[in-house]
Amino acid sequence: MLPHGNEPEDWWVDGGTLRAGRPPSDGPTAEQLPGRFVLPGLVDAHTHLTLDFADGAATLDDVDRALDAQLAAGVLAVRDVGAVPGTDVRRGRARVARPDVLGGSRFIAPPGTYFPALYEGVEPEVAAAAARAEVAHGADWVKVIADSPITEASFFDPPPTFTPEVLAAIVDAVHDAGGRVAAHVTGVFAREAVLAGVDSIEHGSLVDGELLSYMAEHGVAWTPTAGTVLGGVAQLERAGIGPLLELARPHLDQLRESIPIAERLGVTVLAGTDMLGHGNLASEVAALHELGMSGEAALAAASSTPRAYFGLPGLADGQPAALVTYESDPRNDPELLRTPVAIVHAGVRVR
Image (cartoon, rainbow, N blue to C red):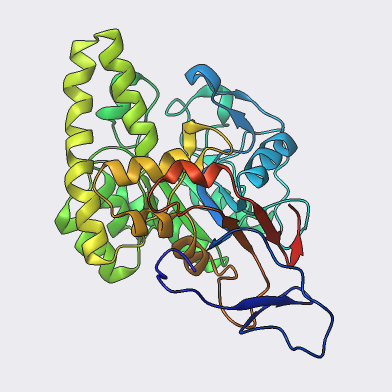
């Protein structure tokens, strides 16, 4: 049982429920699931179901196609952190043919601070009300753009979009409505976002040990989207864009320092694909490992950790069965996550 088990165990699924031990001998003959290693159903904690990032450009995508790609890769739950206006992200859980879908809010940002095709700007004085309305419309997570990434340079050195006071008001409004806040932040404003009370930092490549200690103490999650950062720096290196590399490399250096610290401190680290594309969670697990996270912790960031954090079923007696199996140990090779040999979702074997 991964991500942490080292000894064989007996488990079975009874009427969709996971049970410890062998099935009773006086019941129906149990079908043996293929595979030797078992993980809780994978979770992509930072995805955009309405977008496709082929060739690095954000274009509209079909939500069902995106969910099909996720399910085929053993991803049984996704958190959509920003949907495009006019598109439909159908949130829900325990649908056999679809991964569980959390989040699904619109991007909350002032006019002129985010990519025009992806959002409708919200003035600061009504931002809290707009964020509360997202919860009223069914979003359990609201995505706030806390600093502005509208140019390549500003992604690495971004100005804040809201004042700390406005951001705190947004957080209070969402919390009062029963939702949680995921904050896009790639610069030093991460500290202000955490102090404003957001529930998760998305990207946050400049978070340091001091801030991580606060996040661990206060239960603030971190989705580093490490593969997106690695890919972005590699693209700049191939293009030989020196000025942007000078801005980008400190982000990568800080990630190499901070990811092991986050593991040591017990920060809730979540794996999310972002621009890696739907069904590519294996690449994010590999990136977390490359930047210093242990193999077990990187697997946990894509499975047991987000399941506990989001309140989804885990590998425990009496839980609804949501699991994936593999012939070989993905702790030794994250690429194996792409090829599960069995998938059980909402208690039903779907592969």
